[in-house]
View 1 (cartoon, each protein chain N blue to C red):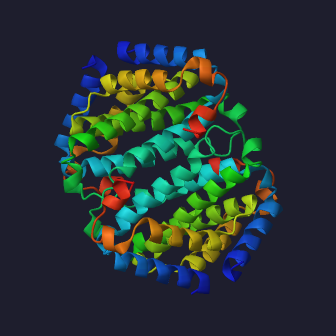
View 2: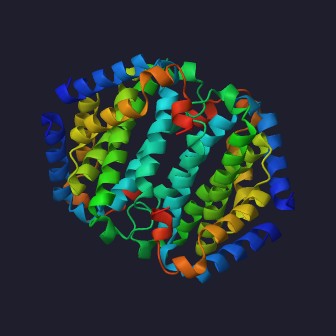
Length: 116
Length: 116
Length: 116
Length: 116
């Protein structure tokens, strides 16, 4: 397993154990929390134009960074509960997507997403 | 930066560049995609009991692993677009949470979440 | 159109017009806001057991009611922008679901959802 | 209660009863399903520009209309389970928002949302 993922996962386990929160951390609840945090991240962008979203102020960027961290922390805990090797799953998914969306066919088109 | 995160991020950049998809990958759009993928992950759990969510079949587990990978891949791309160091942000967030939720005060209670 | 939906929609149009917010209310942005509000509603339930979710305190219920209202208000504005007759679409969807999930085949099983 | 909301709610109750699905329809699970459906709606918009989102094709519009119906149907079932009068909650929320965002102060600005 990746050392950073492993180290973060160990910290999160200790954190939850000290607080006796493992009882709340069923995969279902963690999946809920992950969705909630992803939406909190989205909230920062909902009224921005795409252009504005590329030019965040330092304050906006700091806030978005914290929400992104929350998403990662719940994702790591969910993967830990389920025994999923996230880095490996991510590498496999990139390969799957490479076969699914050949560059020669989808270049410059967003249709590959919307018409799958 | 963490080597795995760096390597995945590099793969994702190349992947998007070959397909000329960078134009679609504004932070706003990536935040939308992240929320959508987090919800696709949640979809697998929505009718399960918490107990059932701890005992997924191999098929369910494989499907959940792919959705978890999708979440990670969009999160990495969003962080890359915004110049956020995800691993560092995650470490900081764990420290913030440790101060916010002292073990002695919140042990065994889920109220720390709901009453924040 | 249903009178309540029509009256709420008219109020929302006037509300946005007085504030010159129509410029922010593209269907895309409203869809983002709808997802964000649905997640804020979910946040109230994420650490509860299903049983607890059936026995909310009056304070929890009031908070959930406000989030549910937010979801409805963004849904109405999105439908208004797109010219969708929500009540009619809902009636059609119930009929589609009735054909898709015959009672005799799916009784007592949540698999109809997860295996579709 | 509003006649359309009442009639749709009655249909949904009968639908769930015939299939013995009430057991799955805890408020927590319905809140999950609501979030999932809102994200499925968002999925149609995630790679579109705001401008494109105002000019959907008939096919896109039909698909979005069905997702919007799904959102409404889960919202109605959640409100029904919790005894929430949605139309009344929506009217109250519009009044709350009118006080919270005076037109004279927020005209033409999306900051009222992001800085609340």
